[in-house]
Figure 1 (cartoon, rainbow, N blue to C red):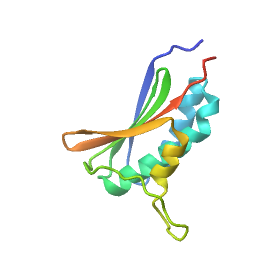
Figure 2: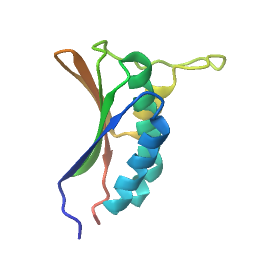
Figure 3: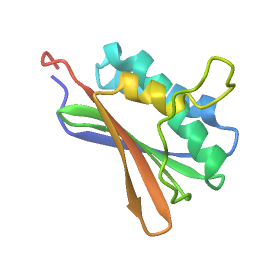
Length: 127
């Protein structure tokens, strides 16, 4: 049985969202959380894209396994993200909406000169 509490961190640079997605799908596999691969990949993709688009080129991505799987992305932009409902003709604006649909909870916390967007996904009891 895997240890309950684990954490891992990756620095995401400009144009490295695909490698962040790949890394974020390997980690749940290592933690035997295969049922969370797809939602974790989508959450990481959306949050890392927003961090790179609205922050400076480097962002920090963390996955934390506790009683839930936490995905955190920290970037240099201190602006509060907004959940939008994109119109069918809009090309963007759906990222946080997807995160809100895939995660049990999500939110934002602020630090000095940065913010962290986080999401939580429940882990099945068998783990």
